[in-house]
Amino acid sequence: MGQTTQSASGALVETRDLAVGYEGRVLVGGIRLKVCPGQVVTLIGPNGAGKSTILKTIAGQLAALGGCVLLSGKDLSQLPVRARAQELSVMLTDRVRTELLTCADVVEMGRYPYTGRLGGTTPEDRQKVQGTMELLQVWDLRDRDFMQLSDGQRQRVLLARAVCQEPRALVLDEPTSHLDVRYQIELLTVLRHLAHDQGLGILVTLHELPLARRVSDWLVCVKDGVVTLQGTPEQVFVPSVIDALYDLTPGSYDALTGDVLLPEAQGHGREDDAQA
Image 1 (cartoon, helix red, strand yellow):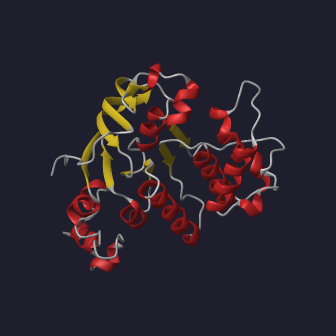
Image 2: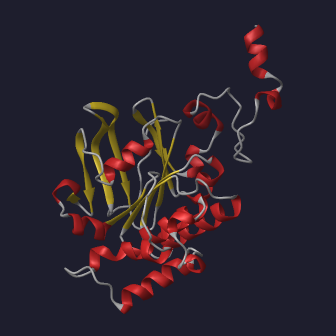
């Protein structure tokens, strides 16, 4: 199908022929994507395709092996750390370890791009911490030791920290991992609110295809070292595209429900093929 042209303009995040990888070895190359105000852009593709590596490079945690990343039109590599943090907030899957910090302390760390030289917070900062924690439904955890939380609770607190940073763009790697269905839906509802009502640009990776279809305005498909397709949910979530992206038996993806059917639900198609 090729890459469909994205209609929005004025990108908050843009990559131009970006190449990402480790130790000089390119994992994914030729990446051209953009995230515009009011959009949720989702990377999908099989495990090991390089989605998290793309996010880490866009976040500045890995050096690009080619091309460039632009934040509001400025080269990421040329931006001071504080200026970068005011443009972009990041929540990756790497485990965060803290010592003797409450959940409110962790969320308050999101205010560091705006604090003075001594790092002190103001009453306004603390008000933003409370408002963000209430939005993410973690205000009741404010006095709890962060390291004593469940994985799902930590995930929500870390998202609150990222949002409290008040960036123009958010980069999130698997934000629904460790969350039950209720909190997955609530979290994605918050993301859509932040994008559509507050104008943030959001770049996210998701494994759950029904959730990706529900939350995304634009999708970027990654496989075999390249971006194979970009488009709207209506363009991407069709059986031929999803089956090819994940190397599924033709007909495995049900576009109506968003589910992937097991082989036995397709009349034992794989067993018949093996016996043919």
